[in-house]
Length: 218
Image (cartoon, rainbow, N blue to C red):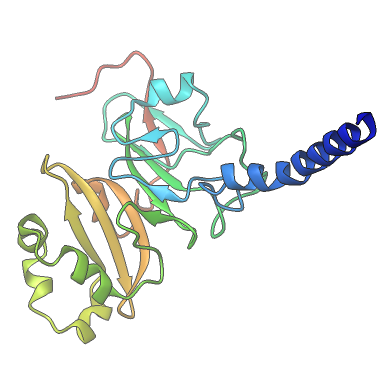
């Protein structure tokens, strides 16, 4: 009886050991190979939320100021922060296989761009998907149709020349932008509507942030 019990216990132990890597893999199925989330939300990606203040992101050690950043007293400021090594994210997980690109504009996180084909929106759209699938999902949404009225007049075959298609959120201030190339989704971004349609991001100006302690001009 004791021998039989020992065999059962050893078998159970072996079963648990063999299942452990499978369970761990299942737990991590929500992230890409580089460790970033597989889904980008309407206003956030992982620990990054649209509208978060630069101050909060710095205190939370979620961004790093670029070395060539210029501090100014009163001016519209814009820059791409560097990202620190986050827990669970592989070192060197940069574009095109990993980390997102963020824009800090007027002291807040204004835009998040994902550049990994493994990342999808909550509706399942990914980089490389045909624009026809995007239209099939959103084509009956009145806010989407109003925002993209001129674009929707074109045949699908001509949409390869359209730089972006925006699906606004109900707040009317933010949304998700699908940049299109050759009738397929080439970029996915979430953020405020002003920055979503910038084709050159922060432009060619040097990266700038407001000097700490200086109140913004209204």
